[in-house]
Length: 486
Image (cartoon, rainbow, N blue to C red; front, side, top):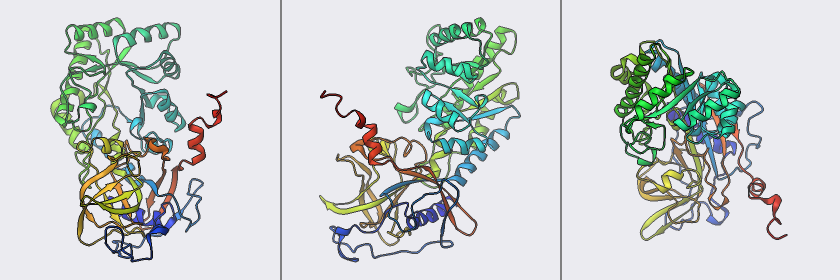
């Protein structure tokens, strides 16, 4: 169903002019051979399901008239898919506990205000890790009661703002606890307060993302000499500390390791409460980091898989004594975003067929620099947005940036691409087009949400307009052009 909606959206985006397609003027007449010696973009393939028509509704709809060429790269978000993921998360935990649960979206995964508003409407809060992310959450209408602040480097000003607003704060270390003590002494707060601990249970497949290693920069390392005792004493000395936070999950981390990290935090909470002689810790923030399957349409592992594993591994966590907070990000958004880009040229080099497109390092930065850890699928469409059919050909898919390694895929078997075709890069809803890497001053792409009606009609709404050359100049100090020569 997700692929059906995406195919309709691609076709509609081309028809609507959200994405400029068609062979460039220098490509020659239709059907003329391209530099690789293959037919031009005259070849077509069929579509499945009802023909898609487009409509735009509301003040956020794209203003570009039908038929007006758009940019060569654009991003799409499937709003129905995002709502479905939020509902699946809520169902998964409701099935294993009656305790109050706040699911707080990790804003870092997709820092776009309309996305945060959509998730809030679906019952999801916000986990923020900077003043900027807090500002985004507030702009989206997230109340303090549904916002959590985490960060390893909070400034006094950042803490002061959060405490004044009553936002839940997880301190990263004992020094930060002392800083919070001083702030609270001068200005009492309603903020729930907690401390992040590192259970040191080990790394996943991607070391740079693993947060629970022996030497991770996050939290208080529980297995270091004297650390556990210091944490327990910190709670006994501060009755206001009522939360305990840990985060073991990330891409490449198995669910069993995530559950072990949660169990370590639960056992620490039990120890603190026993020594305090009361239920001082009443909330466990278990973080997020559910991995995403980037190799197919299948959404695995599921939230239900993880919730059931927690029920088996840490049954006391879910018996109703503790309120819970989660901080999922990638798993809520990744599957529901797609980058579309025009194929500008095709060529051969050293026997390799290469399709040069407008999507590369500026959008899929992790894939370009670490392709083994972050492979992405590539889907091929013709210049009218129809899925390309026919025999596959091994080819490289390159981006527009001026360095040789700007490749989305190397040696990928795909229907042969032609100038004016469209590639779709699925599973890019998190940590991709919302995290622009301004190599070559390439512009940030427009982002549009889409919905598909029962009759196949596709409606778009602008989430973020594309960046203009004037905005690039302004961002690059254009207003201060003479600053260094005066």
